[in-house]
Structure formats: C-alpha cells, structure tokens
Length: 144
Image 1 (spheres, helix red, strand yellow):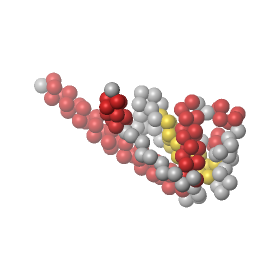
Image 2: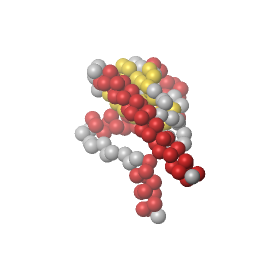
Image 3: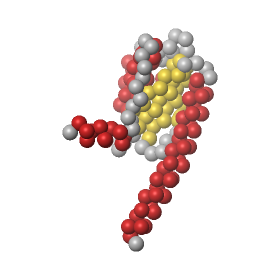
C-alpha cells in the first residue's frame, strides 16, 4: 500500500511539473516574441540543477546595443521573466565593466553565453544543441 501511495505521489508531481513547465515555456515564447518584434535577440542561460538558473533575453539594435533586456531567475518552475533595465543601453560586445560587476555570477554566466552565441551566429557557425540534465548524466556514466 505504501509503495502505491509513493508511486501516485510521484506521478502527481510529474504531471504538475509538466503542467507548470508549459506555462513557463509560454512565458518564454511571449517575451521572446515581444523582443523579436523590435530586432534581433541574443539569448544566454546559466543552468541550475540545485542552484538558481538564469535565462537572459536581450533585444539588440543595429549597433548591437541592448534596447530591452528580460531575465528569468529562480530555482523552480514558478520563475517568470522580468524586465532587467540594468543592461539596457549597454553594448552587447563591449559592456561597461562597472555594470558587468553589478551582475550576480549566474547572470554574468548567462550574459557571457549570450555574447558567445551572438558571435558564433554572426560568423555563420552552427550552435550545437545542449544536452538535457538526463543526457549529461548518461554521458557521465559513459565516460567512466
């Protein structure tokens, strides 16, 4: 009986995570579309499994200046995008060091990734798909 109760609890948690994850994905799509309407968008992320994760969306003008920035940061699927005005009017490729230092380390990592991806796309390189946490776990076992 206990095992059945545990299995039901796991299934309910999985369904709830899927349902709430769908809302988070819709929030991403809504924010990305809004930024994309005004120009190219650079995206960076800092993955977190047991620590805070960050997704950074930045709309750019023709001079690679950040016109609008939005950040989602949190540990759970309840995290939502919020306007991140600290980066606005900064150059994507030449950010003011004082502004950069004001970013927490997770946001710095997401910003750095956004810059690297932007540079690769500008050079015409293909961006490889990243592995899921499960894929990384399986890869770790295969290396050993």
